[in-house]
Length: 337
Picture 1 (cartoon, rainbow, N blue to C red):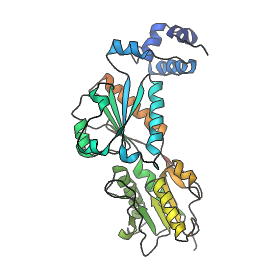
Picture 2 (picture 1 turned 120 degrees about the vertical axis):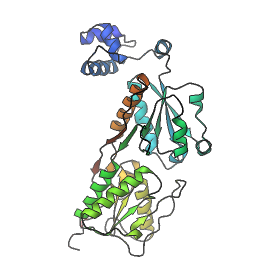
Picture 3 (picture 1 turned 90 degrees about the vertical axis):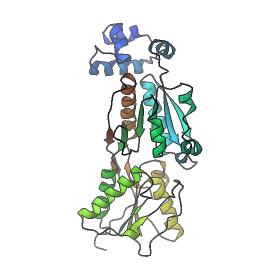
Picture 4 (picture 1 turned 60 degrees about the vertical axis):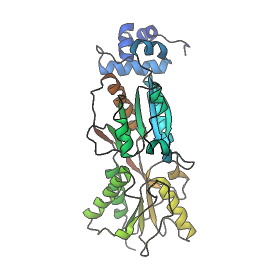
């Protein structure tokens, strides 16, 4: 691979002019979307690197995007959002941007302190990864930088958000449990905690309604307190046969608790999760879960932020990315039992 690939090299390789390559790589008009994508893919394959300093001087941009993750989602046992950040950073780099990670401290969130990367004008926009409190959302809306929210949404109509299809994912995996003979199904998650947990609960509930299974309030089990810290999951006196957990880490914690009580999964209880993160595979048995399409969500969010930087009036609203069930070993068919 050539060590210093130029636009002329790309142009000669693909059979167009250097001007066309420049327009494509800088998302200028005059080049079709299909040709833009073809040029960008070839540029990446050949190892072309944008001259960010020159672009910054020309366009008045830093070509940095701040990726903000609330502190409560970055503990020692939480890897989902950090993996998400890696995916976002990779897509940003493909587009000639860099992702600057900012961990939003709880104190700063409560006191509505904006990140230093904004105050020092080091970024052109923000991707907020993980649910933040409503007052902080309103604070962010007062700054001129474009913002895209990921994995959560609020009732504000002018917010752009990219989320997984939480409702359908939970609905689909609950249907799977019912097809396997389960009727006494609990939901594990604090339904007042995040929009994702709420939507997953509503998908679970819709599945029960469609199968004429009455919702049992005792089967709604909290997994965390109001600060987002995981708590011991209290089991009901009348035990269900299956549990729908709002995420894989909670399913992992639940299975550990059930084993401590002398039970076996899936022989005694079936357990399913959501996310398909590392906890889905390190849990024994491995988890049946809903896989979140992290790459597609990252590409969508980066595309949105890029368009909003170029056009501050651009709006996309809330976009859902479908996931899919990954079938493993944590569900037992109890039909006929």
